[in-house]
Each structure stands twice: as C-alpha cells, then as structure tokens.
Length: 141
Image 1: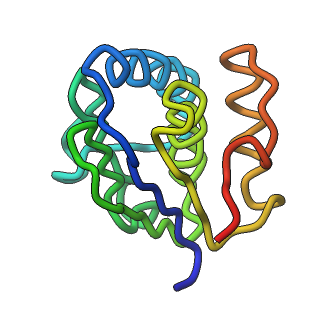
Image 2: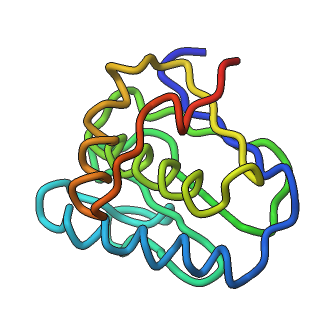
C-alpha cells in the first residue's frame, strides 16, 4: 500500500484513557507549533483537533495527504497514508503515545520500517521524557 500507518483499537477504551492520550498528544502539537503547518481534516484555514473525543489533522497545502482521524469510540481498523509529508512526524507521534497510554488495547502496524519511525520516536521521547523503542510500538504484520 505504500507509506501507510495502521491501527486498530482491539478493546473498548474509556473516555478517561482517550482524554489522557489526547492530553499527551497536545504536548507534541505544542512542540511542533510553527515548525510544521497543520490544519484539521476540514482544510487549510482550520486548526488541528485534539479534543477529549477525537484527534484530527492533516498537513497544509503541498504538505497534506490523507487526513489523520483518531477516534476512541471506533473499534474498527483505521489507517493514514502520509506519503512521507512533514505531518507524518505527528501521525507517528500520536500513534506512539496511543500505544503507550492504551497498551494492548491498540494494535499499531506500518508499511514503514524502523528508520522511517525513528524521527517520531526521538521526538516523542524528547518531548515527553519517555524511552520507547520501535519494537514497543509497531507490531509485526
């Protein structure tokens, strides 16, 4: 499929768990502020959404590709092709945080390899003071 990240919430997650995930992800958004142009899934003039019930964003203009939509109520599989655009850093960041906060309740896969995830892993570890590794996040397909 190309440069695509996949996730599936395997079990119900509580609103509190999703809120914790979103709160941690807002720290990533704040750290990126101004370095990567972002918008919501609605277009260039809207702000990314990091709420208690959903996370939704895309890159802006030529930096955009597929919308990243993460909703704690869904238990179906989801995916996002980023085509290696700059907002991929935040896509991988959100998925890393989700795996850390939700543990076995979420499964994360990717067409991308360890090297493709390393920038996101380094960014999350530095911003949130964690020490996650690729093997902790992405499950073998």
